[in-house]
Image (tube, rainbow over all chains, first blue to last red; front, side, top):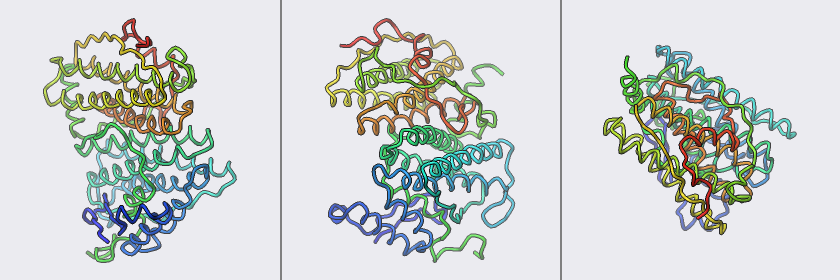
Amino acid sequence: MTTNCLGRRGTGVQADAGISGEAASELSRGEVLLKGALAVSAIYGAGAVAPFVSRALAVKKGNDLEILNYLLPFEYLQVSIANRASSEKGDRGEPMPLATREKEFLQMLLKQDGEHVEALKRMIEEMGGKPVKKGGYAFDYRIFREVLEIIATIENASVGAYNGTIVLLSSNEARELVYSMVQTDARHATAALIGRKEEPATVAFDHAVPEQDSMFHVLPYTGVYPKELPQPGGES
Amino acid sequence: MTELTQTRRGFIALAGGSLGGAALLSACGDSSSANAETSEFGSGDEGILNYLLTLEYTMADFYKKLETSNLFSEAERKALGKFGIQEEEHVEALARQLKKIEGKPVAKPQTKFSLDTGPGTLEIAEKLESGMAGAYLGQLPNVEGESLRQKLAEIHTVEGRHSAAIAYIQQKPVTPDGAFAKPLNVDAVMVKFKPFLGSSSGTST
């Protein structure tokens, strides 16, 4: 297994979860997801992976409740990072003063991504399902620029996850809702990227991203850090 | 502050300047609802594709003209030119999709842009890019073919990015509709595009 974590900041993870392309072709999509998730859990801790994976495994065409429940944690993550950073404290509780415009940006994300959470939950409940609960999330940042990097990573991963699953939804109502949400998430990602002096649109197509890959990008925030690295809030 | 200075500051933001608070506040957008009325461009998915192709042709042409103007610095033109390249890729993708469904592609429309000032040009860009994002969102629910819907969805969010980036450099809200982007119907979109289109739009080759 080769895993490449881009620093302890955890804003980008590229993981070859021990599945070669050749081997993967002989496995079902569910098996690939499970193997990938198990490989990741060996590093990050099984508790961090289970809720996401159980939903991702259930993402199938027409399984609207599971698809919406798979997407919901992406919105939880967006709200969570905006909320944490709005407190003007770094991940270890140290002061992280924000400029007014930075606070306004975080408040905008908090409000709009919070509305996305509520809309998804409502839709799931209206369909007779139970929204997946918010997990425990951890973010590693000291300055606002690092917050922007986390936001861009999560929003971009969300766009890929949405674009990978919307087409599987059978409910027109659900589809229309999430199409309107994914455009907003792409706009959020754009603002965060420009704020980091990065290109807002590097490619002409926001390709659909398979569940496994989308999860890999956000797993570093799901509460458990690699064991060999300092824990947030702990001693460095 | 001159208009040009404001524009330059906007580009500095695009290149990575600090976040402008005013640009990040949400506001209400167009409340038009979407419909499937693309019959002017053909029936069903063919009509939707030709409608969007007309818009993409217009966007690609706009950026081409912008690149050859003297309104912006080379670096600025390069930043916006990248959007133009992406619009051209969208044109090619839509044309491929049309071929796939054995549809007849619409003729490339004549366009008429008068790009006199930097801020004025950005106003046009903002109007058109927000129209693009709204147009895709308006048509996605109407698309019958699943793979086509997937392809349009992948373009849709990029148009949202373009629109947000232009809004950002103008210090306007990056999410003008708030948490939920609003779809635009054909009429609402064409109101934005018509002033820049010549007479040949909607004509099949």
